[in-house]
Each structure stands twice: as structure tokens, then as C-alpha cells.
Amino acid sequence: MAMFTRALDLFSHIVLVVAGIALVGLVAMMGWLVFGRYVLNDTPTWIERGATLAILCIALPVAAVGVRERFHLSVLGFREALPMGAQRVIAIACDALVGVFGFAMAWYSQELVDMVWNFKIPLLGISQGWTYVPLQVCGALITLFAIEQVLLDILSKDGPEQRGVAAAFLE
Image (cartoon, rainbow, N blue to C red; front, top):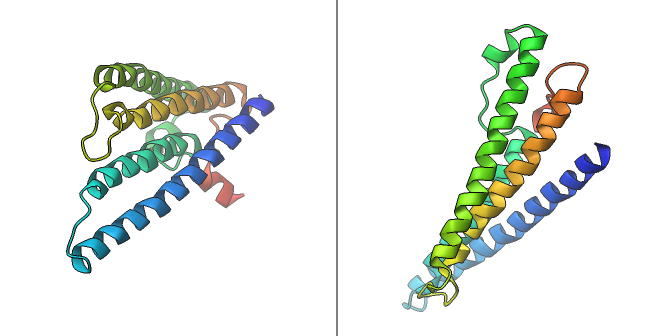
């Protein structure tokens, strides 16, 4: 289990580094857009579509990391009011449902990619399928991270696992 967790630590770190690089690229694209519009008086037409793609590449995989680090929206008041055994069952059920959702997201977004792969994004000249690839990556990562959470919840002796950014901050 420790090796699996270390591998997922590496995956989540890579996702955050790539998202950070994409964010820098997004800021550069927006800077070029403003420069082109107000200084050159010639707005680059590809930037808006490229920025949309960059936002997808940033937001979706980082949302998957949020599932792992538990910095997503989560209401735990009801669960924490229950006895420890019920907390464990609800935690495992919730994490398993998140995993099923992630798997469905990855699976069905493959259909979207296949359906539009032969079409080009006019201003960028790349396949329209690249619009949906971040959705696949997000779904696959959510599935992996949810599997880890379920295993941690099952193997934990202290009840549902409370790891993540908030838990690390409190330690």
C-alpha cells in the first residue's frame, strides 16, 4: 500500500507541476492577447481557443488531485456525528462512488474523443479530441485516487482517513 501511495504522490505532484506550467502559459497567452489588441491593434485569433484548452488542462486534472487531497467541497458533519463503524461504511461508500464517477468520466469521455478526433479546431489546427482528453485524464486520476482512499479507509484502524492538505496542516 505504501508503494501505491508513493506512486500516487508522484502522479499528483506531476499533475500540479504540469498545471503550474500550463498556468504560466495561459498568463503568457493572455499577455500576448492584450499586447496584440491594444499595442499592435491586431488581436491574435488563436489565443481565445488556446486559452480555453489551457484552462481545461489546468482545472480538470487539478480537480482530480483535489479528490485525493480532499480539498474539494466536502460536508462531513453528518458523517462525523455517526458512530465510528457507520463513519467507516459511509466513507468507503462515498469514496467508492467517487471512483465509479471517475471511471464513468474516463470511459464516456473516450467516446467523445473518438467522435470528434477527425475534426480540427480551426484556429489551432489540432484535433477537436484534445478538448476532451483532459476529461479522460481527470476521470482516470479520480478513479486511481478514489481506489487509494477506499483502501486507506479499509486498512485504517482509526476510522475514515482524514489525510490531505487540511490534515497535513493540522499535524
